[in-house]
Image 1 (cartoon, rainbow, N blue to C red):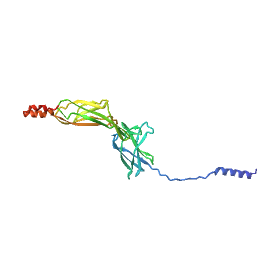
Image 2: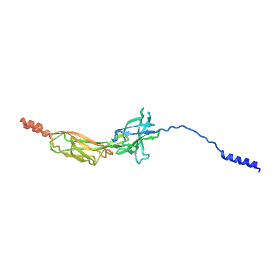
Image 3: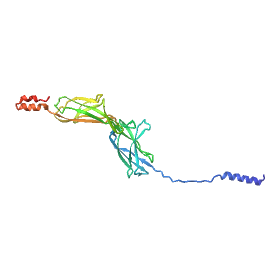
Image 4: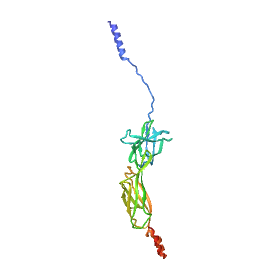
Amino acid sequence: MSEQQLAEMYERVVVEHNTVYAPTTAAHTITVQAVTLTLAIDRSWEVAGGSAVFSGSLRANGAGLPGETIGIFVEIPGALPPIFWIGNAVTDGAGNFSVALTLPWVVAGHAVAGYTRNFRVAHSPSEAWSGLVPLAVAFPARISGFTAPATVTPGAAFTTSGILEYQTGSDTTPGAWLALAGKTVDILYDTTLLGSAVTAADGSFSLSVTIPTSGTYTLTAQFAGEDIPASLYAPATAEKVVGVGAIPPEYIVPLILAALGIGAIIILKKI
């Protein structure tokens, strides 16, 4: 092989190994939006079947996003999945939303009432989520059948009684009232505590009390609730007006008649 041929071969190899591909570029414009979603709840606790106001805002790069659907969810630890939809809100022209929702007893078979649950909102198109906001959801409670005499004498013992119950439910539909046993019910006249009773297995309570002075009073049976605001049972009260007189009312007519000299009419004494 001649020197000419060797030079041509060398040049060919250098060219092939140093000019394989030329550079190239491509461009695409993309907009990155900083989407923020907030949530606030207007109270720290509420009963199941009651309502709470969920409000907040949806912003993209600081500007409100109008007409957007916001999903409202409750978290149930241990459930799969652990988050459940309970309602929607729609943002207004400024990107704000506010909606009153009825709180459920149960959602998808999981208890909400009786616990403090975390709630949050989501915007599906942007995949934005708010932070968690706690809300305690209590069982409603009531005192039924509260009884006491309409009139008594000062210092005379009388009995007051009633039944303490709590309400169950399914989703947001109220259910049966059940006995609430082993709970303390306070008895007051006006704001003065007369005593306390503990409910029996059937929710009933009974207490013998006295009111020392004459007057007309509001007698109150009061259950303070349990674990509020952490939430288990809501407070409950029942009231009855009681008159306390220096002379028992069943004697008033006979005494008037006796003063008029018609003592034989004492057979009208109330029994």
